[in-house]
Image 1 (tube, rainbow, N blue to C red):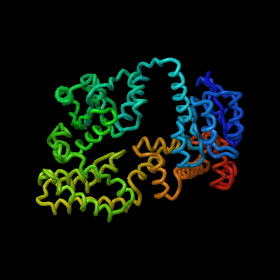
Image 2 (cartoon, helix red, strand yellow; image 1 turned 90 degrees about the vertical axis):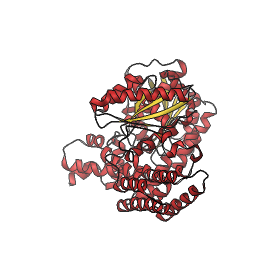
Image 3 (tube, rainbow, N blue to C red; image 1 turned 135 degrees about the vertical axis):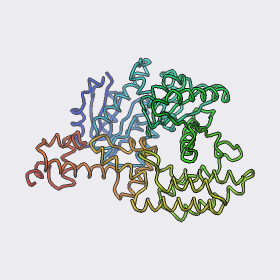
Image 4 (cartoon, one colour; image 1 turned 45 degrees about the vertical axis):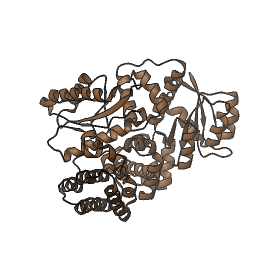
Amino acid sequence: MYKVFLVDDEPFIIEGLYDILDWSELGLEIVGSAGNGKEASAALRTAPADILITDISMPFMNGLELIRDIRGDRPDIRVIVLSGYNEFEYLKEGLVLGIENYLLKPINVEELQATLRNTVEKLDREQEPPKLQGSDIGILKENIMYRWVTGGISEAELAERAELLHIDIGRACFFVALLRTDGDPEALYRTAAELLPPAVPFHDLNGDVVVLFLTDDATEGKREAIERLQRLQRRMEPFGGCRIAIGSVERDVGDVRSSYANAQKAQEYFLLYDRREMLDYASLPIGGEPALRGLPTEMNYEKLIFAKDEEKLMQRIEADFESLQQLEGMTPGYLQSLAVEMIIQLQMPFRAGQHGGPPLWYSEGIKKAAAAASKEQLIGIVKEAARRMMESLRKDGRSPIVQQVLKHIHESYAESLSLKSMGQRYHVHPVYLGQLFLRETEVTFSEYVNRYRIEQSKRLLKETNEKVQEVAQSVGYWEIGYFYKQFKKYVGLSPTEYRELS
């Protein structure tokens, strides 16, 4: 069994950690605990541990100081950090120190358990290569592939996992295809898995089937891939058909995310080419003209959109048109295609997690840009789309990403909720997301989650006969002591007192 050492200045947290998990079932045993970093540092020298679970804010020596101190003797110790606050600077330093995970209090049992299982797997792997099969491999492969195409995995971890999953990342070229159907999505995935190997199919958050092709010859490999994709389309005709968007060919494992992003852009062009069943990024004006790559169309409008700075956004659009006009080889046709691309860029912050059709300003803007007859018309159309987009934001008062996070909290408050998981879900760095959330809601992420959970618990205490512990678990608190503490903090009464008064 691997040995675990606990550090927290709140005794009930230590007690709760002892009780909330079946440690032996995880292959773990708790060998000791301490109330601050100084005590822990001394104890760990006489009672070595494989895993350290520590709070951040403690007297005498905080959690980060403890990690730095103990790393000198035990560089291999695995560390899981607990915190009651969104301490961004602590989080960033913790990442530098190589922590396994940063968990916000109240501790979600499932998230802690998953982190511990993952940590045990890593420790096992250091001693003996794991033997995975069946559904375990499928789940792991989906996770690794999605993180690869979205840039969420280091090359070192990718190389390790790819070897385990028998994925040959040593090929010369990589490109992504996005498959979408209005018919049977399960039939689409089954057909892709049957017809496309050794290419690797998996799902993304939009419900599309993503297929990553790996080849040594860009031209021949892509030709063969397109033939197989066309065969898949014919097979899918009885099941509702499918549309396919192909991304750019990349020559480095770290650039696969660019191919995925460009496949997403190509997918947006189906709005313009509504009679086509397959679109290749390289055949679109924005992707197919070498002289026009890396243009201001790679512009990051997201920051201006999130900041709701309409004036600077308009200035940026005008400046981009001015820059485009000056480029050698620019033609009216390319300028028109780039205007369409600008509108697509305006829509990209809304894409993650979006369900249903695109907004009206977007679809109308694309069609108007495709029919425009002059540069002045193009500028006016793009700026009109930007104005309508900003107006929709003003009506709601919050940026698209914060809207999505709030919606997720309201629908899933009983589940594990952390900035890290939200960042992974919506492809945003958790530190940036935390700062944006604080700016737009005027409370931290954990504060908002706690307040919302307590409001839901008040409702359950009034309307049901559930035991207090059951109410706590129903709203996402698995430590009854922590639930009591938070309830008293926000309500001024204990849950029992509140129920009696209600």
